[in-house]
Amino acid sequence: MPDIRVLIVDDHAILREGIRSLLERQNGITVVGEASNGREGLEQVIQLQPDIVLMDVAMPEMNGLEATREIMEKFPKIKVLILTQHDNREYIEQLLHAGAAGYVLKRSGGREVVTAIHEVYEKGAFLESTVARELLASYKKNEDSSDDSLPYLTEREREVIRLVVKGKSNKEIASILAISPKTVSVHRSNVMLKLKVQNSIELVHVISRHPSFLIE
Image 1 (cartoon, helix red, strand yellow):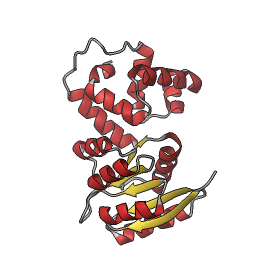
Image 2 (cartoon, helix red, strand yellow; image 1 turned 90 degrees about the vertical axis):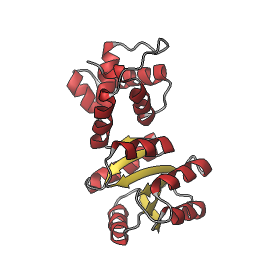
Image 3 (cartoon, helix red, strand yellow; image 1 turned 90 degrees about the horizontal axis):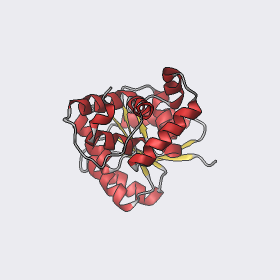
Image 4 (tube, helix red, strand yellow; image 1 turned 120 degrees about the vertical axis):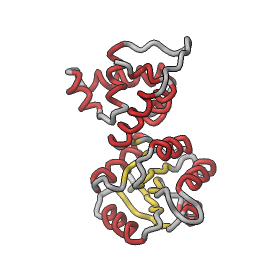
């Protein structure tokens, strides 16, 4: 398998250097470039065609939200992974709706960042557990949306998605529910088929509109 080609976009040079140092020590990851703002990042994307853009949010000239929208419009196959200090729900939702494939907080450890890069590259999506819990807490406050066309989910399927949106892995869900990881995978696939979503990010979007799925 070829190395995952990563572009780092952040306005703090010392942070870019730290991330580059971290990633260059990992097998299977190559840092192809750096940019100090969203506009430079977009220019680098055009020139370098990376697999993943590791994107900050608050930057001069063009912020991460605007840059993500531009990249997704022009290069939909490139994945944008947000790396930021902001854990505000509005930030998270805006960036995910703009097309970001994942969201990691800067206070996370280096291992979490590396894991996120691999998950986004291999599976197309990643939500750090802290971010998933923030979204879940918000969705539980929403009023339920009544829609007779909503698909029926079994109680076991609901149990699985409650844990998915909390950021649990298939292995962790299997342990909690006392079932096999293979069974978890089957339930997860069935839920995504019923809800017509392709990955965990899209699943969270659906749950945000219909929080009744999370009622225990």
